[in-house]
Length: 182
Ligand SMILES: C[S@@+](CC[C@H](N)C(=O)[O-])C[C@H]1O[C@@H](n2cnc3c(N)ncnc32)[C@H](O)[C@@H]1O
Image (cartoon, rainbow, N blue to C red):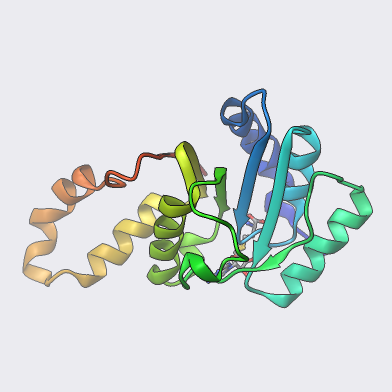
């Protein structure tokens, strides 16, 4: 199992927010970039009505997630799948459009390329049910702005940063996005 000091610190604040969105009924969850698997095991155990699908792109992470699942005996946590957020949702393990209640992504956006964030938002837009939630935690907003900022001609940066940030949104795909500040 990979060591996950940050995940140890933030697992309970994250769980507290997820409880608000998990609801009383069955909940299908896809976690993108699950890393060590600590969040998956901790949150799935605390939310027994959830069916939790962890994933990552890194084989070491997949091994660690499987080890957490085994060690903590979390029965509503599925074996991890390989998922590259920069690739189309059609490669994400066969999840059907409009079938997920929650897509979770913790501390990936600021350590990965912009195309991973773009893929995450596109994939969540397709796979979430109407009213489903994309939960992100970490430096997501500052990361998105940083990527956008780097693309701007230098003479326009100061003029456009604020209005672009205020206007950014998810578009009309019918799901909400919840960002818990890190
Ligand atoms: C900082 S770690 C966070 C892990 C975990 N979510 C946590 O908070 O402990 C970043 C994770 O993003 C994953 N990652 C990076 N690029 C990815 C991609 N294109 N698709 C899926 N996961 C990716 C890495 O393998 C790593 O597990």
